[in-house]
View 1 (tube, rainbow, N blue to C red):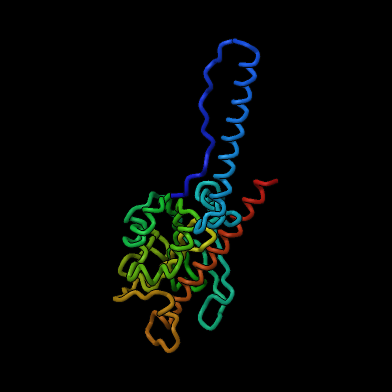
View 2: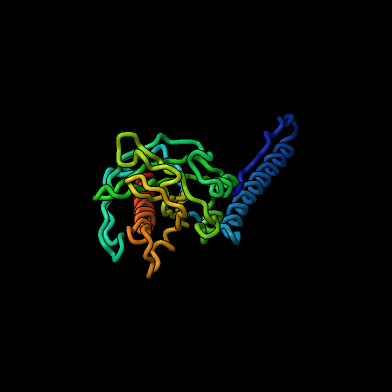
Length: 268
């Protein structure tokens, strides 16, 4: 949860009886001193909190990003078409087309992998948005997820350090779509995945890719392993690791731009 902000708390002063003028003056002076003391204490608390080690200032757009799940249109968060220059094997260009969008959902095992859910719940898991894309050849399908949390900047920075490696074989759920090329995209069709928690956004971005023809994969691979040089298996050769990691990075950049724009609009 975000750290508590210092607040000024005062009590209502009781009425003072109308006695001698000197007495009234003394009371007023005491109230002034008390007031300055409270204000000074509150300001000192703010300054100390701002300089407290381990609590970095929030990056620009951080607070605005937390609200994007209900403030931004779906076409902004999940554009109908995504261009990924250099996102494929050998830096080949990729283009992804959105084919399925799910309603926003509460954080639960139905929409989040078990280990990721256990990791983000203590931070305050707000909402999960998911969509599924296909590549230009309609041979692969990729489910992407945006997990919005209430993590403060320090917690988010820690969360993002080697997240995929720490979660182990924690593959995100697939999102299928009837009457689409993702109709047969289920748990057994998941081939490669990637999970990322950017330090400057209170969001976890996930992606899981698979073959559009519905073939099963016995051992899904994290994207960095599927992208390793010298791999000759079908998952690596098809570029499914590149698909998962490339679309994750693209959505991160898109979220960052959207959040920064929202912050600038607020200051106008």
